[in-house]
Image (cartoon, rainbow, N blue to C red):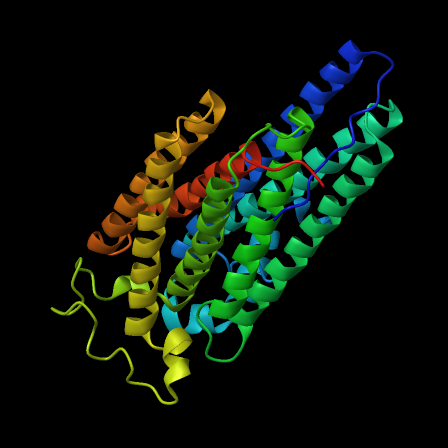
Length: 357
């Protein structure tokens, strides 16, 4: 489970502590929201084939876009050297390149903006001594984790420049996605803990374990969804609930050895995600029903209700993504809603967290 925060923001009076706590939590909630937007931008760049349009990793120098025709021509010439251009877009014009460039540019610029939104307020709060040293160090660790996410993102993108590659490596895409979700979970949990440092007394341990199980299964399902995205498995078997007229596709175990089917067989990759998504939805809905039946405090009930609503929306978006053969707006909404659903699970788990021994 993400770390907990027990240190109160510093302050001379209780009122000042409360004010600092509200400001710091609002800042961190804003950062969590920016990560959700980043997840959506990442999905859009992948779906439009824009992710390989920038062939250099320049965290500072790459802040400004090309400003002259010559600079555009230079970047386009670099793009022409990679397999994606040669195999998929040999007729692309400079205008077409600019179209895919801008989405990836915004994606990377948003990442830089997130770094600034984290480190600049952190420095200001630390300078004003409005934040405890332990919490400041913890937040600095989140900044380092964000920088690592940028490196992993470039590690992922660079796989698309390899021989005969027209997209990034599926497993690198999954690592990039999971690290983004880990950062999101850590920021959100910290924000919640700053806003409400003390656990709610009498939270039922059984319900807490159920919600934690939902979080684990949901994370596995999201990882499987990343593999579907990375292998482009969503463009096949665009019927539901059957796949090629069967519940389990006939080609599920076509690759030998069998374990390779889990990552290399399009039919198996998509079926596994469908199965995990269905199990996750059933577990989440069951947890919501059980939790609400116990008449929990209003904040817990609201968090449970949000979980239930978001998982139904998520399942519907997943089916719609298949039936529309991965329509970009629906697919992006499916990815963004997955992050929102994970956030709802974390909020519920936070509401139910136990006192330290």
